[in-house]
Amino acid sequence: MSKLSYVVLALCLVTLAFTGCDKLNAKKAPAPGAPKLEFYVMSQCPYGVQVENAIKPVLDKLGNNVDFHLEFIVTPKGDGKFDSLHGQAEVDGNIIQLCVNKLNPDKMMDFVLCQNKNVKEITTNWKECAKQIQVNEAAIETCRSGEEGKKLLAASAERASAAKAQGSPTIKLNGKDYNGGRRGNDFMRAICEAHTGTKPQVCNEIPAPVKVNMTVLSDARCADCKRAEGMVSRIQGTFPGLEVKRLDYMTDEGKALYKEAGLKLLPAFLFDESVEKDTEGYQQFGRYLEQVGKYKSLKVGATFDPTAEICDNKVDDTGDGKVDCDDDTCKNSLACRKEMPKRLDVFVMSQCPFGVKALDSMKEVLTNFENKIDFNVNFIATEDGDGFKALHGQPEVDENIRELCAIKNYPKNYKYMDYIWCRNKNIRDTNWKSCTGGTTGIDTAKIEKCSTGDEGKKLLRENIKIGQALGVTGSPTWLANNRFKFSGVDAETIKKNVCSNNAGLKGCEKTLSSDSQTKGSCGQ
Image (tube, rainbow, N blue to C red):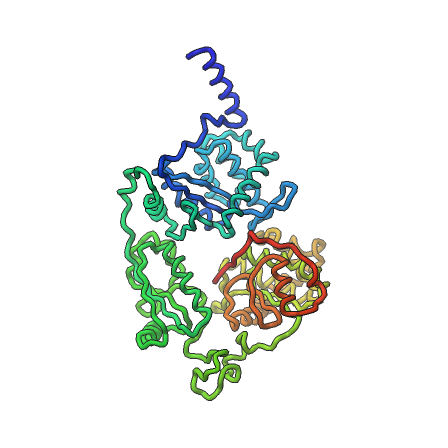
């Protein structure tokens, strides 16, 4: 080796020690015809983590036969600050992973999977992960704590915005939305099909998907049942061999199936025994299924009773001589509810990140309207014997109750919101008492006595009936003027919907904060 070559190698090794050497760590160029696969995620989103874990073995097998990119969904706030659905810890986690990608792109996914083992500790476990996969810790620290990390995240956020990525994960294959399965073989199959060059041998070794039979029973009279088609595409993401049969309740076959399965509400997604043959899919999906007759039915929070009066079709559906709102069963339906000006209801799950965002936005909304709207917080859960079930488990049930206790005891000028806003800073923290006392002026003993006794249970039992009567299953769901449903998490969206139903209301002339990046809900 020449003297000059030794000098170049020495310089490269010195650079590697501090920042990583681009030449040594450069990502291998994609093979001719290799498709471009893009993941847009939030580093602490469980669904993003799921697809990252699934794609890693695929990337290992395909090598440079796939051009893979991992980007992050955040909202830039200026001055190097960002807003992310799961808070500042997620912002920091995004930056750390982008720094590793810049310094050691060939080890980036090894690092991500290491962090994914305990994604809640993403801001601290990176040091141990750096040691495990042999990435320079000092170089990561320099990047993540300085301007470089912020620039990397800003650039990634810009790419996510250009791709119109809002939900985590958003997946693109060769620039088009990917709606296929999210397991290793599903990704492998899609990538191989999109490959336009010489395909690697591994593409010939992918097993065929297992055939799974599902019947969708719906009703053309049900406006909300149209979401059934959206559910089908999501289910196909878990069962790529899905074969779908569609039936309408108003047909003889549809009514017979409704009776056979002992159903009450539609739409229904009914699987036969073949669902258990797709072992991997069933392991992921089984907890969302319940036995109905000889079928396994997907729990989707169905709300339409095909045997009841439809409240806005001017037809006596039940044959009792009462049409629409004259029928007692329609009294709680949206179509028959009395309009109440300047009233705003929100239905949330206390530990749903989208619900948290929505309630946080109410600080600006209430200030804008000078607290002169009738604002009400309602919770989404179901009774379970003497207790309750909630999407995020017993901790969410407990927090729902504590927040209702705060609402009951501190309604004046929405004082209870001080407790909720404090809790929302770290909603999964078990130390709820840190948001009482001197912090908020909320009496700790009052909340504890209410929330641990029968009073708290009674409050939640009565509160959840409101959303159940309206068929609300997604957090957050809004109701303006007691009649008009809408969705959204940012202050401007909430304000616009209040104002569109309350002409001339003071505060409607102002523009509030908006967030086009964060959309979605937690569903039962």
